[in-house]
Image 1 (cartoon, rainbow, N blue to C red):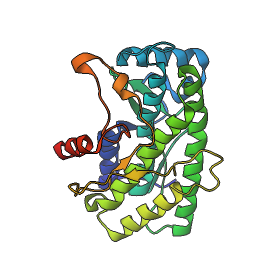
Image 2 (image 1 turned 180 degrees about the horizontal axis):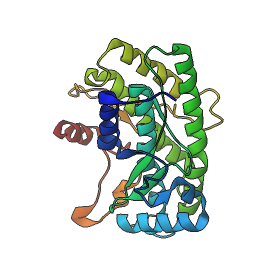
Image 3 (image 1 turned 120 degrees about the horizontal axis):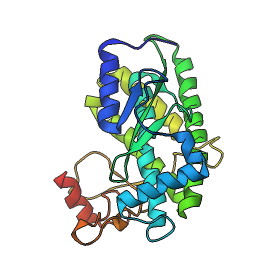
Image 4 (image 1 turned 60 degrees about the horizontal axis):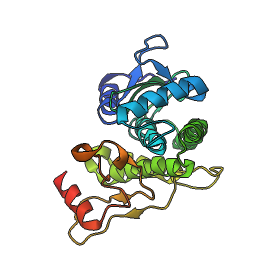
Length: 270
């Protein structure tokens, strides 16, 4: 395993924590969060976690908004997926996806914070062919990791697993769009080439066994919009069911239910 030290390591840990609420644990015993991903595969523990998550969102597991608990779980769990992708595409580092290594906590409003272990870092100058192979293996491991978790949550909440997968795929695709189009992220042409290489691997639908990050998504188009490419989700995540009255969440900017003018106005106000 390559050692990962110095300024680059500090930048990676700060990036993952700031943008993806994901912490890299120093060791197996330095546990900060109460739940393991493995708990999501245990019926009783999963039920307890999802009920607490529903309560924090003002929803009811098995009642009003139960499907929204599932779709919002998928949307928020995709933050961990984006952390794993960012660690590899930006910092040549693989994070552990073992069910015992990944831990999480609920943040009080239905979201989650994550922690996991650093697995391997590719040293500068290592074989590019090997890096491509590792990118493909990482994608396959992520698909295998997600499949039982999302299936179990879908069964418990009544959410559509197709919708849940589409929400994860949207965030993966939007992440790569952002990385490719923002020079402040890729900084060097070599890093941009590596990001594009990973993008082609992760968004290749072949050999995905029915589960994929490659769902076809439409970009937002408006004569007034001059910002970076912005992808529209295929399905609503049901976040509008959270809250009521003046506290209603409303449609997300990427929601297919949002009209073009409102989407434009929201994006320009960001």
